[in-house]
Length: 107
Length: 125
Image 1 (cartoon, each protein chain N blue to C red):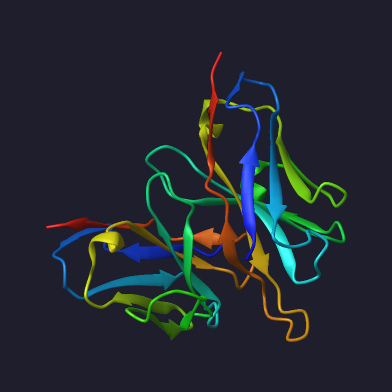
Image 2 (image 1 turned 45 degrees about the vertical axis):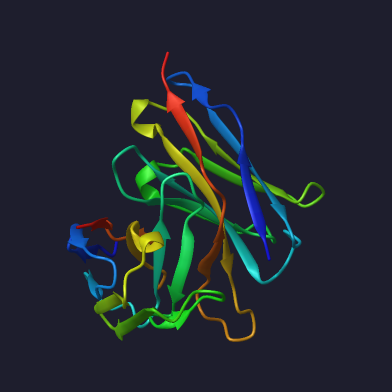
């Protein structure tokens, strides 16, 4: 199985801050990485696929980059609705695997 | 815009079978552009992919679940279902259903785009 190691596991930030979350795959996955936002009581939201392509309706403050084994999700100018937990996921091969999550909290 | 909604018993006894259904609206479950998947999140833990099915009936499941999983599609009801047998307390989790978009022409691997809200299933006697 491909392991997805996400860091940090949590971070504290203020409204308006720029934050970056990283994800490392245990072996190359091309650009087949997606990012998701999970908030309590809400359906998970798909943010990015193919490492850098925004899903429809996702604001441009979210951006993704990377290929091979190293990937990043950046949120520019955090807003109150962005405080949530973020997960990366590889879909290059089965079994599909997720990172451990990054909880973004209000400082 | 697809909408997915999970349904099924919220409490299951140990050793019994967990059964959930996902109802899809806003699109046909028989679409060749979608795989349909189940994912779970145990309390306080991360996400785990359970398995996926294509409208043709092809299925993929997580070997970590040791062949306890059955996923099926009912095109007449626009639903797909999950059965997980021989459950234990470790199977207590929020269970999500999701759609994986598949670009049939380009052949890229399918990726998650739409998710249900999730349903908490507790395994307890």
